Image (cartoon, rainbow, N blue to C red; front, side, top):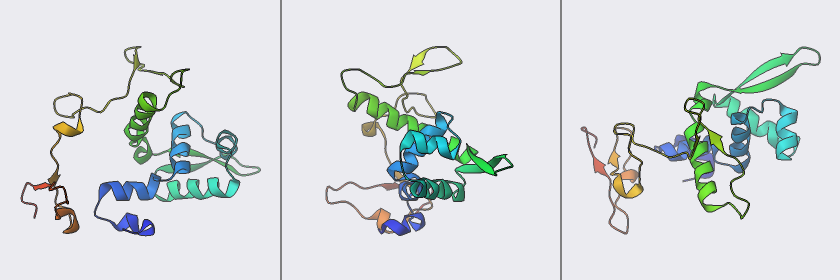
Length: 170
């Protein structure tokens, strides 16, 4: 796999990493979910150069994750709004938050707490099964080939792990 051709891989992880797989893109997305929208605000919060920030914002717009919307005519200025495709990244950001809260906090504790507006309770973001609602553990999940799998995906690993084909997939 080559870094600059990840978008073409028959792998959902690789294709996603092609869009959001660098630290600045993830931090831009974090700030978007914290309702940061303007270039100057991203730059002040993240402390990165204008060129790097402009590049990441352009990439996220090009991939349909953000939408660039004018908010001022003279001089013309834009803000960046999450599209539905961008909003669908929320579980990924929250999974990273959860991992960081569990493994990377110092003695001061979590840097942010999250409240569910519907029930008013503070919560820990967790991944659950869409069918039964139970929390997911990697040891309790079987992976199967889907119709988009390629031949390289079907190769067994040195440890003998394999993926099962289902629903008529090769």
